[in-house]
Amino acid sequence: MDCCETNQPFESLGEPFVKTYHIAALPGDGIGPECLDATMPVLDAVQSCCGISLKINRHEAGAEHYRKHGVAIPDEVLKDCLDADAVLLAAIGLPDVRKPDGTEVQPDMMMGLRRALGLYAAVRPVKLYPGVPSPLNTAGAGIDMVILRENLEGLFASFGGGCILNDHVATDTIVITREGTERVVDYAFQLSQRRKGRPIDGKRRVTCVDKANVFRSFAFFRKVFFDIAHRYPDIEADATYVDAMSLYMVTSPSDWDVLVMENQFGDILSDLGAAIVGGLGMAPSAEIGDNHALFQPSHGTAPQLTGKNVANPIATILSASMMLDWLGTRYDDADAISAGAAIESAVAGLLKDGHLRTADQGGNTSTSAISDAVTDAIHRNAGVAR
Ligand code: ATP
Image (tube, rainbow, N blue to C red; front, side, top):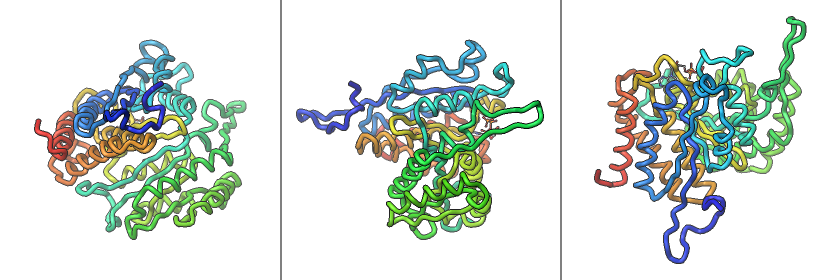
């Protein structure tokens, strides 16, 4: 049995027991491999400083693999993702690699992974680190919210379905189920319990974002939201329409803690969220299920930047931090939680310092130099001489 499949104590027969987490790493396409390469030394650093152990299996998958072999994710790679304790995926998709029906490989592969791994909650932190300029002048108390996107239902339930009639009418259907809504809303409240509340006053608040004034499906989503909210009397629960929310994220970004919403709304608002905290190069994400989890930057493959050592690797590095935090929480492993925190703290220090910035942040620091700086900071913060 894999050592991480149990919640056994870390001490056994007086010997310290170091868990080895099995990670399936998918570099993907475009800037994905560079961003993953920049993350590997960071993971090495926390292994040597924080007492954790990782076994990382690196696999080719994605659009380039499809171009060469006619398949985006080989069966053995999917199997390793299913066997792994977590999946770390850098970025996939290339606009010039298309399936015979003209669509890109990326949606197929991502929806396939989400469905196979049961990843129902997409966690998109929207956090403005000190030193990172925001385009907003409305964030006096700071920005630190999470967009929680239902990840298997909503409009995306129609993926691969939909209908075109006589070249005149096209339909895709939104699917909202009680079970799917309950589990993501429950996750939203649990997430709020672990956080420090909204920046403006520290109040824990979970907000349902919907279009309940127009559609029955969203009125149902809201009803189920409040059914679950009653179980969490210590957390403020409220609801806002998605169009208003897109305005509030700009005018009062410090007021929000956790926002939970349908799949397509989450897809759209999370890009707005990235924009107000430094852009896609700064935006990590996690996709969580009951038995599996996948971590990836929110950005795509930016093919025009590929191979130039200029991509911003911070979103991938912060995704690895989220991965360790999730593993630590799942397996009650304080060292893994500390390792995740060590990565975030090293990144935060670098950003606050403000000297090293990639081109998307208005600087000229290379991808590999950011990796070196984060790695050095982890060693320095741990007091380890190099
Ligand atoms: P996709 O179509 O899959 O979304 P994409 O790369 O074209 O992929 P985005 O990820 O939305 O689209 O990125 C849009 C642009 O933002 C990129 O073309 C690039 O200029 C910039 N960008 C995104 N991520 C990064 C990054 N990590 N570092 C630097 N620039 C980035």
